[in-house]
Image (tube, rainbow, N blue to C red; front, side, top):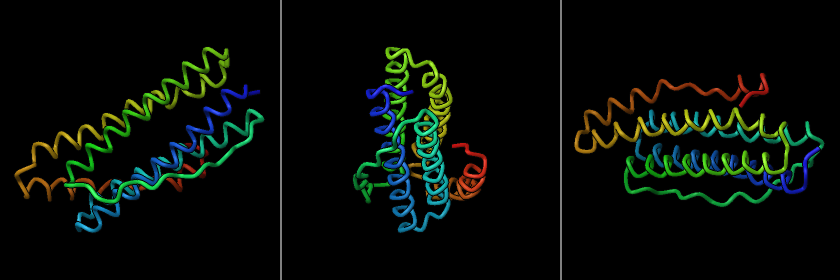
Length: 174
């Protein structure tokens, strides 16, 4: 059984994960407006992955006899100065989510809620991957800043990322 403090914190993280999806869909729309289909594809796949993360929290809360409380999702930005600025924002957002997950893990330890601490281990590891993936793209964008050819090559590269959500939903993964 979850303590009230832990339940509240898990529901807040569920909301953050849904905001993450919303943010990445907004970035996808931004890239669609620029006709960067590869960047848009990458952001859509990322958004779908974030929905999967939210579903993990949703299911875990109910598995522990808690009650999911859906909160309002703030409107994300819809414009960025450039593709590099969009990926800078994505990287900063992933760092923020990592901080939040780490704080949840600390709270679980303080509450002596070892089941939740174990549940959060997957997210701790996932955030290392999330930050690294966005950082790699950001580094390439910084390198390509003055080269339209490299920007178009990167757009083509990012078009190959496939969505994972249908598979994730069927497996209960996120």
